[in-house]
Each structure stands twice: as C-alpha cells, then as structure tokens.
Length: 213
Ligand SMILES: [Zn+2]
Ligand SMILES: [Zn+2]
Ligand SMILES: [Zn+2]
Image 1 (cartoon, protein in one colour):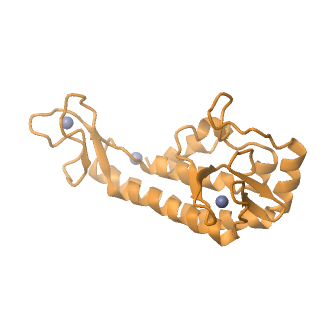
Image 2 (spheres, rainbow, N blue to C red):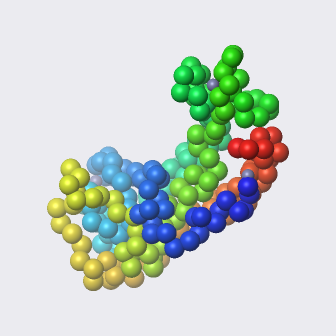
Image 3 (cartoon, rainbow, N blue to C red):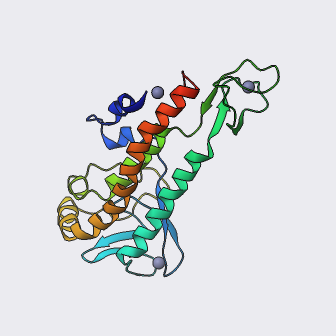
C-alpha cells in the first residue's frame, strides 16, 4: 500500500497507455456554449491553440487563461468528490446491492444479507491520482512540444480532425503558449500536491480498516 503503489505510474509507459482509462477534460466555450474535449496542443475540429491561447473554432472566441483554468479546476473538484463519495462495488455478480456507498468499518466483506462477496472501491486513490497526472500532462509544455500526449482521437472516430496541425506548428505553438500552459499546470499541481500527500494518508487509513483493499 501507500507510496509503493505509485510506482507503476512513474515509469516510461507512454501516456496513451498510462492514461487509457482516464476521463477527458471537457470544456465549454463561453462564447457559444459548444462543449468539447481539450487534449492539449493537438488537432481538433472544435478548438485550436493559436499564438495567444485557446480559440474556439465554432465562434472564434479566444479563451482567457482564467476561462480555461476555472473549468479545469471544476473538473478536478468533480473527480475528487467522486473519489470521496466512496462508492464501492461487490465483486459477486449475482449480488443485488452491487454498487453503493461504503459506510461500514467492518472491512471488505459485502454487507448484503447472505452475500459472501468482497467490495472494492470503484474510484480508487490510484485512479484519482492518475486522472490528475493526465490533466497535468495536458499543460506540460515539453510533452506538448514532443507530441507525447494521449491522442484525443483515433483514425476512424466520427470526430477525427479534418485538418491536422504540422509538427513544426506544434513545436512553435508550445513555445508561444508556455506561460499560458504554466497557468493551467499550476492549478493541477496544487491538487496533485494535496492528493499525493492524501494518497499516502488515505491508503494508510484504508489499510488499517480494510487490510486487503
Ligand atoms: Zn495499501
Ligand atoms: Zn465558441
Ligand atoms: Zn455482495
């Protein structure tokens, strides 16, 4: 438990693999209300990074850094609250109460009458930590520049970008937006710091209550 569990996340696994199960960062345009996933400086039918920041392709609205970071922060808080809701799932597929909140301090046993199943957290501390690392990667200037981000779209997707940004544009735009990206990164880092500490604290608490979860 604890900090040891962080290690599989720290290696050289490509982001596409490491962040396979994370949720995208959805943002909506303050100009036209269009909602779309933000995946860093990558090709999208909905937005583009220009030399002065993020621009909506539907209405040309130029996001101020705050208009982006507020939505980023809201999304982070949503994930944190999902984690704190403490939903657990029974591993017995025949169990009726398979998803519910964990209130019990009786450990990993399912509390459904007669069920011999074991409950697991649906949104684990590791998942939350990985989600935050994903958000962090989107605002990482070097990762953007080297095009190491998890792709937003795959060929064949209905929403696959009609126009692709060239490698040299990605490099130039990453440099031009360094400060802009840093603002977003600062927001994620604030929570990652908290989460990292809490990750260790919480796993210790959970280990104490539920030795094998
Ligand atoms: Zn543990
Ligand atoms: Zn718009
Ligand atoms: Zn059960």
